[in-house]
Image (cartoon, rainbow, N blue to C red; front, side, top):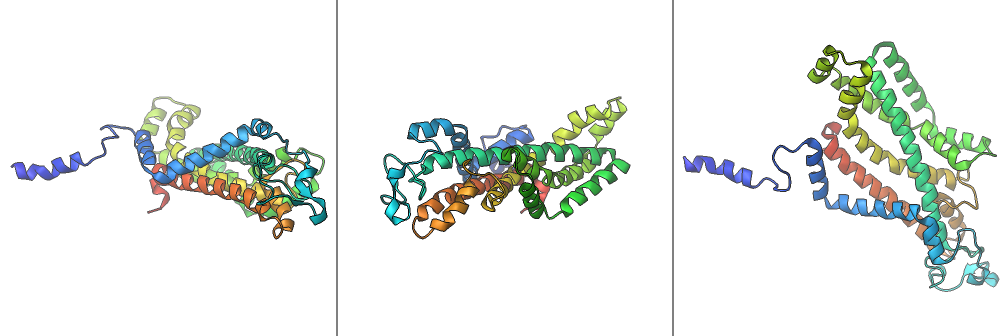
Length: 319
């Protein structure tokens, strides 16, 4: 008798002690995310750049330079404005070196560029998530004509060549706030993707027993949507949100790189990369530093999003 029960005992003893019995799905998800090294590293990188963006004015003041301040003593006018010193002019006065020709402090421009790039990306992501979740949950729950109209609107929006349309809109609108315009334009084309995900989740949830019980109990559509349906789609929405942030960052960088995004003297990572191409041979650090910041930020958000999708949305089809 004792030997028959020993495998079960061994299996129970091998279960993770960090998660108590009876834990809910969110506690299990947090425990699984804490177990992954890639998640910890990604969170550290994301937190670093978010803090850098939030504290950009303080950091640039600590460095002693504003992003628009020129330092002609840091460049050699007889060598085409090449930064003086090794590695693009890195020194105690300029922690990441200076821009060629202008002598503007690269550290100040990188941290302020992080503020602009992440502000546009995160705000556009918030617009996409709110609009997409509202449209998807409405289409999936009410169905019928409402679903047909919203689904056709999703198809219509997704059929546009979004990057070309963004370039055209940004080129035509000139005397406007570029940051607000970029946020609105990027958010305009991003919501159908998450709307389709939420619609599919809502279709699978609206006939569950607890939803039927709430409906029989006299709950109205608003109460059902906010208290029963929305918590059920929260996991996939969170995972999808983290995955679309790097796309938003890359889109902002691409528009600025093409010259239709943020304009000088406002710094942006994409704009800095575009300007650095002309100096790649003489000052490669001018290209490497903003490119590395952009690469690390996109990679960290992507790895974090992949992990969240694996844990919060196991039906995503990943193995």
